[in-house]
Every structure is written in C-alpha cells, then in structure tokens.
Amino acid sequence: MRDDTEDPNYLMANERMNLMNMAKLSIKGLIESALNLGRTLDSDYAPLQQFFVVMEHCLKHGLKAKKTFLGQNKSFWGPLELVEKLVPEAAEITASVKDLPGLKTPVGRGRAWLRLALMQKKLSEYMKALINKKELLSEFYEPNALMMEEEGAIIAGLLVGLNVIDANFCMKGEDLDSQVGVIDFSMYLKDGNSSKGTEGDGQITAILDQKNYVEELNRHLNATVNNLQAKVDALEKSNTKLTEELAVANNRIITLQEEMERVKEESSYILESNRKGPKQDRTAEGQALSEARKHLKEETQLRLDVEKELEMQISMRQEMELAMKMLEKDVCEKQDALVSLRQQLDDLRALKHELAFKLQSSDLGVKQKSELNSRLEEKTNQMAATIKQLEQRLRQAERSRQSAELDNRLFKQDFGDKINSLQLEVEELTRQRNQLELELKQEKERRLQNDRSIPGRGSQKPESKMDGKHNMQEENVKLKKPLEESHRLQPHPTDEQDQLLLSGKPQVCQLCQEDGSLTKNVCKNCRGTFCDACSTNELPLPSSIKPERVCNPCHKHLMKQYSTSPS
Image (tube, rainbow, N blue to C red; front, side, top):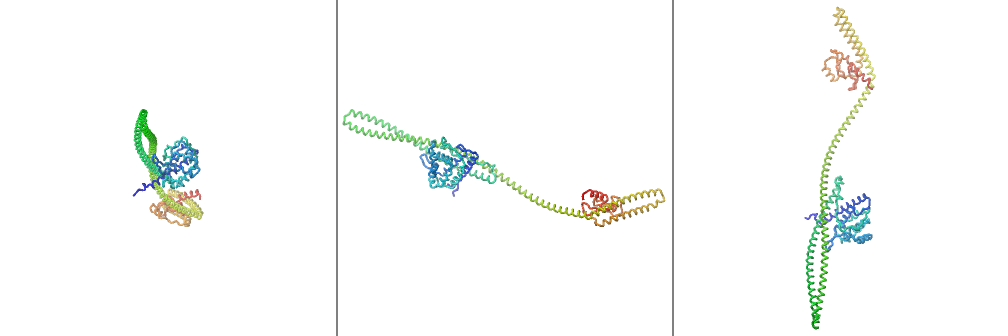
C-alpha cells in the first residue's frame, strides 16, 4: 500500500499550505514593522526583501517547465505579462520593466514587476485579476499549483493590507537577475518564553509549519541540485563532443586549404602552359580551366560554409562556457542556501526541543498546582465546617449569656431591695453579736478574777460557765431567727459535693474553732467549713444566679465588690 506522504497531490497540497502560512507571516510582519517604522520603505528594508522572496516562491510553485537549448527553464515572468491584457493600468509597469537596461533574465523582469506593482499599491488588484483567469494560467501552471487553487486567492486577499505601506525603489543599478531567493526563517521565529495557553500552542503550530516547509524546501533544493548536476554532466559531454567536432572541422579546413593551394598551383601551371602551347590545346585547357574554376568556386563555398560552421561552433562553445559558469554560480548559491537552511533547521530543532522541555515542565507544574489546589480546597471545606460549628456554638453561648443576663436582671429587680435590707440586718446582728461576744469575754474575765479572789466559789465555776454558755447560745438563737426567716424566702438544697466536703473534713469551724454536734456548712465561695453562726449569710455568686450560703468574711468581701462594681 502506497504511503500518503509519497503522493504528489499530498506533497503539492502541503507545499501550498506552507507557502500560504509563510505569506501570512511575511505580510503581517511587514505591515507591523512598517507601521512601527513610520517612514517610506526602500529596497534595503529586510522584511520587504523577505516579502518579495516569499512572493517569488508562491509565483514559482507549480510552474510548467519550458524546454530551451540550455535545458528546462521556469520563469514567472510569463504569467505576469498577462496582467496588462486583463488590467490596462498594468501596461505602464510592464513597459517600464521591458525598458530597464540592466535586466537580462525573465526572473529579473518578474522581480522588477513585483516592486513596481507594490509602489503603485495595486499588487493585490493585479493578483486577483490574474487568479480569476484560470484558463489563461493553465498554460503556465500545473492544475494543483498555488495560483490555481484556493490558497492563491487567500494570498491575493492578504495583499490588500499592503496598500497602507509607502515604498520607493530605485531600479537602476540594482542587480535583480542574480539575487538569491532564500527565505530567512529567523525573522518569523517566536520566543518560547512568551508562549502561554492557546497563544503558545499557536506559536508551536506556526514553528512546526515552518519546520515542515523548511524540510520540504530542503527536499526541493536537493532535487534541484541533482537536476543541475545532471545538466552539468550532460553539458560536459556535449562540450566534449563539440570539442571533437571542432577538431575534425579544423582538420577538414586545413585539408581544404591544402587542396585549394594545390588547385591554385595547378591552375597557374595550366595557364602558363596554355600561353606557350597551340590554340587547339587552349580550348581543351580552357575547358579544364573552367572546370577547375568551378571546382575552386565550390571549394571556396565549402570553405565559407565550414568557416560559418566553425564560428557557430565557437559561439556555441562560448555560450556553453557561459552557461557552465552560470550553472556553477547557481549551484554555489544553492549550496549556500542549503547550508543556511540546514542551519535554520538545526535551530528549529533546538527550539523544538526547548519548547518540548518547557511544555513538559509546565505540565508538571500545572499538575503540582492542581494537587495543591485540591488539598487547599479540602482544608478550606474543613475550615468552613469548623467555622460553621463555632458560629453555632457562639450563637448558643450568646443566647445562654443573654438568658443569664435576663435572669440576673430579673433576680436583681425582684430581690435587690430584700438583699439590701437583709444585708443591713445581718450587719446589725453581726455588730450586736460582736458586742455581746465582747461583753461575754469581759464577763468571763471578770468572773475568772472573782473566782480567783474568792476560793469558796471554786465549786460553782463549772456551773457558772455552763450558765454563761447557755446564755450565749440563747442569744445566738435569738439572732438567728431573723436570718432563718430570710432563708425561708429561697430554698437552698445542699449539693452532693458539699456533703462530700463535710464528710471528708473534720467537724471544726474554721472561724471560731468550735467543734461539737452543731450543724456545719460549706461556704460556696471559699469552700471552707463553718458553723451556722459563722455562715448565716447568702449572696448570689458569679457561678450561680440563685443566692448561696457564704461565710462571714466572704460576705464582707463580696459586699465590698458589689458596692464598688456597677449594677
């Protein structure tokens, strides 16, 4: 099965696509650089020179070869001469091209015509008129040539943009015949660092198209070099043959000259003998002389013909030598162009490897970033869930705080006055108790002194002590009654924790150091164990909204805090 890449139609289509891409790049680069330059362009402007080289390749694509004495010749001057028949305005530049003295080849005339058409700003118009006449172009181009297909119309449309460019060329003194038409691809290569996203892909595609075109052009140049080498070999053989024929002709000329000298000698001898001999012999000799003259005339004519043929052979030899020199020059130029194209191809390959490496590294970086992004998204989701939970807990705590503040405010409204009055009563009772204790202590000291002064009353000491103690207990009971009445307003159940503290500590009041069967209470503020007399007060604590039992020192301390703090 035949490979598609070896199909001539496929190769021609690939060449057309590459030439169209190169034309797009050349026209776009020329317009952008000319607008940035902001002045009239001349023939030394590099992008303009490259544009003409690309147009020359487009016009040469698919040209039919015309056989001449020196071999096959492909020139795009023939199709361009047809433009003056289609557009009368083109007759002026065609006549100007024909009148230029320095142009000797059809290629030079075609290059001059392109430059004059660009100066007129009608190159696009002329190309469109030429492409629309396919029946005329079929005489010069193959059916699948670029000028016969859709790509030619696209290039003609792109040429409209060149009407914004002002160009001025001086044709006199410019050697358009021997210019080398090689495309410099380095002007159209893009930097790989600017490649991002879809723009980088487009640059890679353009570079690959350029690479394919360079390979195709390299293949064409190799085929052209092989054809030129074959022509050179054929010309060398023809030159050798002509040299041999020239040597034969020279030998024949020498032979004819010798025969002519011999005939002259014979004729002179016959004339002398006729002068000396009788008249009868003169008639016979005259006939022989006329025959000799006739023979001499024929030999002279033959000599002239040989000389003309020799001159023709010499001119052909000179023409062959000139053609050989031109072919050698063309071969050298093609070899230089091939070397430059190979160097550009190596640069393209290096750029391709660099772009592939950068693409691979960018893919790896994108993969790492995507993984990092997924991890960050997971952490973000987790943090969002945590924040939502914290917000719910915050709302719950806020509601609890608001309800607690409401309860505290209601409690203060309901029991604030009662608490103040009870605190005043407690302070008054505490003051009375302290006074009674002081009086009791003084009474004890007084009785102790009396007992020491009167020995007979020593037996009554325990009884008097018991009576004093009994009196103190009665006074305490009397003082507790108003407190117990205030306690009844609010029930205060004993916690299991307070029971554990009472069961685990010794039954001794930490304030009065009294022990016995009296009831012991736990202070809700300092957690100390006190008797009923030392823990008769209740206050609301920060840990509880309801009033709790506290010891007397904690009661004083808390009352100072409540009195100094805002309500």
